[in-house]
Length: 260
Image: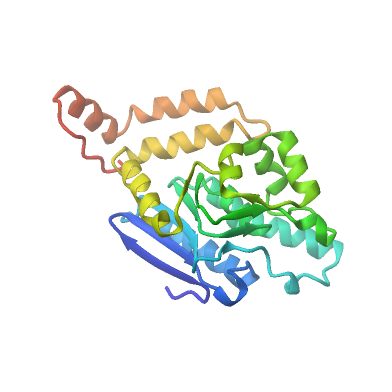
């Protein structure tokens, strides 16, 4: 499938999705959100893909925010609908995808861009990356999950400060806060992220999906994370991957997982 604002490549079971709007610093507009939603759903169903890496085109920006011109004249109802549709179709969908999605943050990740990175399962940043949620400077608040995911990652106090001051933080500060896992030179970003992806690919896909589900359950109202873990742990025993993993361990060889 061809996309207006995305570049997609698949190699060695890794899908790299690149947001491609360089003249707009890869800002999110409706078309890009729609493209991302469709692409992530298709890749999630593709048996040749085990890990998805999400990044931005060029060296300046991952995603430098939302395309403000599209919603500058929205009403209260239209604004709420914009946030609800975006969260359901893309941001929440990525967070709950059974396959790992890693954000390779290659520059500015602001507003909706940082929210997109936070929806991914974890983040790797280039050393020139800058991150922030500047929505209050527009008379808004983050609407794609930023007020929920940022405190989960950096703590309530730091999230309050970042959102209320609208300040940008450096990649190193983001690492200190726990917002990103690693900081690497720009030229090494994708290769470094792919090395992590390859480590994930060596492990059992069904178990990876259940780990994602169990971890996420701890952050959802009305969900018992421990109960989700127990049930997910049990389901792993019914898989071919469990039989392969335990047999390979006992036979002192590397396991060959199929995801079944």
